[in-house]
Image 1 (cartoon, rainbow, N blue to C red):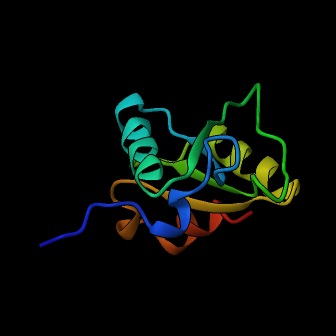
Image 2 (cartoon, rainbow, N blue to C red):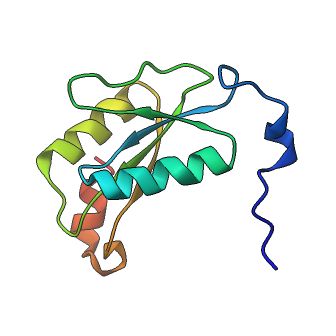
Image 3 (cartoon, rainbow, N blue to C red):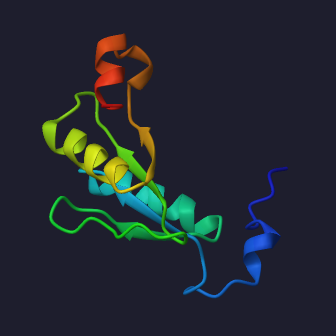
Length: 109
């Protein structure tokens, strides 16, 4: 039986002291799933937009970027800008395992 309780190390944290993770995904449904997962582990999702990227800090230094089956310029630009300010990036999306080596390395630029 799967234990769905949050990690106890996060349980005593208040909302303000919870780890903050930037989240970008063009698809609202996918973004909602990512945010729900973060909430379950006791983290606070910070919405990332091209216009309002989050500020890097020790409390907010990771960003999850959802990428669809096609990589768009906006997603690449957000990844570049977040990486340039020090964020660690987790890129996820449907079909990423089928991307060519060139395509999967484009997001690392």
